[in-house]
Length: 226
Ligand code: DC
Image (cartoon, rainbow, N blue to C red; front, side, top):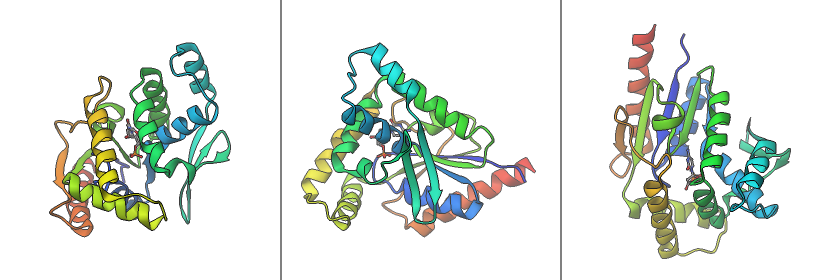
């Protein structure tokens, strides 16, 4: 059976990861968390004090950076230059840092190159901001998942609290709005729904309902391409 490429884009906290992970598992596809890649590079920028103003330094750092997404029974393991950074990249401040470095052209070019290499043979569920528009514009299935900002902030707040992080709902909402604004307004590959993507508002649908809609789309495409 033909292996499809499934693109899931949308703002922070819309439920992309939950849906993408479940879907990848069901289909036996590779789960590609592209946000984790921007986060990993942002972590490196911070740890190695890479000067983002110096393009030559930045390009050299990008060339020698190795990012691996390893699927393990406990979840996705993110390796940066051979070191496990899975936990570190989820710190709340890394969300803003990732959003900032992701606006830079050399960073985007390198990440897109890596992502295309990882998904070259199909059979991937990739989630991010520009998957359906830039990374895999020919993806057979494109989903644009949204939810109200209040709902998304509440979900992210619950998640962070669950991890024992000291944050307030107001801070979480503010941080999320700022990040979405930056991701939507940047010049390069801004967060945008691809014209041929199906928009799903997860404020009004449970995860199971979203999964049912996505599954239907996948079945249609599998039927057409066989
Ligand atoms: O999905 P996430 O919250 O882990 O992503 C962190 C940041 O990385 C997000 O605010 C913007 C950037 N990003 C991007 O520009 N393009 C992607 N495909 C994925 C993430």
